[in-house]
Image (cartoon, rainbow, N blue to C red):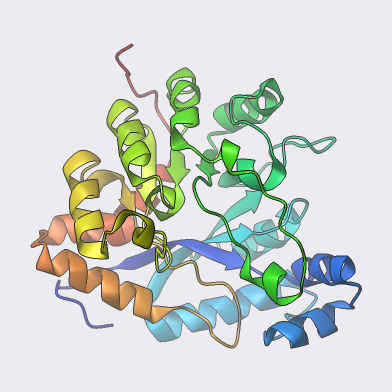
Amino acid sequence: MLTPWDDLEVSDAHIHFFSRCFFASLGSQAGKPAWEAAEALGFDLPPEDPVELARAWAAELDRQGVARAALIASIPGDEASVIAAASAFPDRFYAFAMVNPLAEGASVTPRLNAICLFPAMHRYSIQDPKVRPLLDQADAQGCAVFVHCGVLTVGARKKLGLPSPFDMRFSNPIDLHRVALEYPRIRFVVPHFGAGYLREALMLADLCPNVYLDTSSGNSWMRYEGLDLKSTFARALAVAGPGRLLFGTDSSFFPRGWVSKVFEFQSVMLAELGIRQEDAAAIFGGNLEKIMQTPTAVSVAI
């Protein structure tokens, strides 16, 4: 992997792990078996054993020169798939999983590295008291918390003709402010620079040193603000600094595999901004490794 920096070790903070369970869930909603849903999407149907899918991702990341990755179980209740993947390849993968705090029995499964909350998708406020038990468990277990904010679209649902009754009232990063203050040991991750709420995401990060931003996807939300990726990075670096940006691609399925173009474009933009070797190393991997370590309380002025 060619980069403007020497010996850059790359880790991806945002890969969706589309397991067989994921396709079975989508298929059942569309009235199709899992294989037919995958075929309609143009995706390979993954093996039933999530370890075999993890093996495929490990081989793909080897081919691309990527050291580690966070794998996200992308439907509630699929935690076992990413835990199996991370257990089989402990030096390659972190286990992230979507959790719906409104679902009966919702909890933070042991051995998860992060839970992923989608307030707009499941239509709740991050400040809802029903979220607190999950945050308490995450805090106790040293688990990071990923909170999707801003615009949310699920391409697979669109292709299958499924509705997406999301509610953007619950998408503002500012809603996370009080929560991040109340849980200073939790490392909160807001993906896609806030996905259309860059200003608000930067305000949040400025006030809460335990909030990180991930850079994943093509960031098509930039058209709402008349921004390009270079200016987005410049603003994020000025406020959050290189120590709280996490590189990610938003890769998700085969046969596409790892989306190297995201890495190539982001590395070019950061090189043009003249970031130092040590800052590139942090953004493209070091920061992910850091937030996966056992947390310590961050002092926050109130």
